[in-house]
Length: 293
Image (cartoon, rainbow, N blue to C red; front, side, top):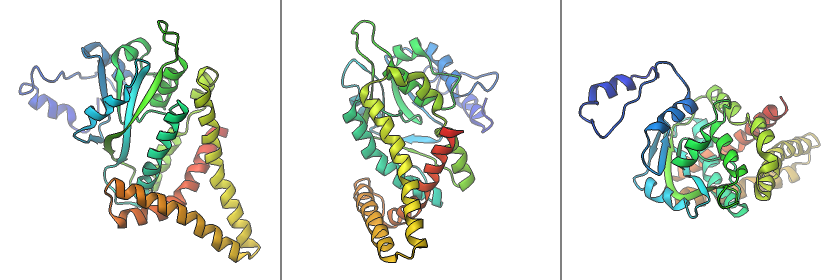
């Protein structure tokens, strides 16, 4: 029930794609989760790809994302998400955030606990989705299902389910253009208290460790900001200069390496580093505001 004209477009071409595409039209706007649950009745394949409207896939995405199903315990897999258009300061900041996030996901796999599957482009086992359904009572339904999977036990094998990550499965999504849109998005992303409350005691030690890491990672920018403020107020300019140089130096080195790896131009990376340095403080404030609210 979207209002962007997509229904009219599909109506126009539905005869041409007859037998290839099933067009399911909601009578009312059910939201993402409920719409996915409705569509599951039509799926006849063992795996199902869920793709957001503002996301496009690399041509090898489906091939690469299937590599993430490395064992029977894996229920869902996602890959690397990168910004589709990079024009505004928020989009430049998000580029660096996503590049750093690829390394974060590799660490999560080492800990055997994935924080959240990338909701804009993800592959799931159809049988798991039919059994558990997407949660309709959460505004972070992708994270909610990710944690629900990792907190559940396979009744036949007696082992907890897993979530996979495929670093060569690339997708590109639209990011907020304005600061207000960015705040609205992060406000939704960080509404995670319910997910932690419902699943924390049942997930693996690795995911519990990762949770503590995420909390510390979100607290560090605020501590660092306080230290910088104190150095400035006490006129300790040498220590301030050294701290900023080390901070930006390490951030720049990692970002430039990852940017080159994904074939982003130097100009985009350098501009992104500057804006990300600022926006990570915004993210930290948003995170704790949602956690404590």
